Image 1: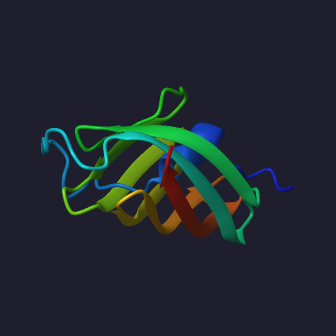
Image 2: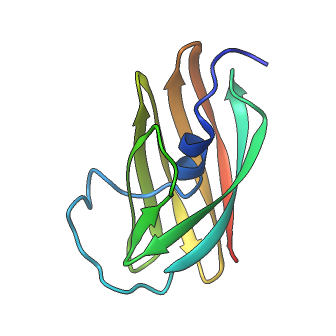
Image 3: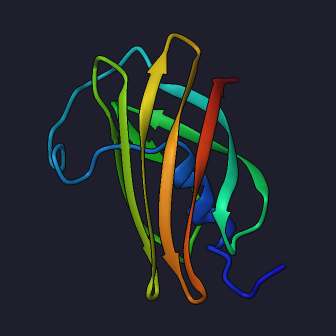
Length: 126
């Protein structure tokens, strides 16, 4: 395995790929997607680990992960569009996708110490 690897907390946030740039500061209130979610992240290209599974929570349309070592901003719109932006040191990642009912998926890309990585994510409500 390569030395480039986003911290596990970074991969989690990517998984639920949610909107910071367009939706930062927007309060949606209780959303249909609020609750606990299990996210599977798969790397399709680059020097990252092959897959990770993590738990996240959505509350009032915001993505929440109770980890440390990263800065994360993420949102889920009332229609289920998801975006997330995160940073850990000089490594970063962005993800996007959509949640529908109790499932979802999308794509992510990032920059680490050994170059770029990208892949897909799937999520299901717990």
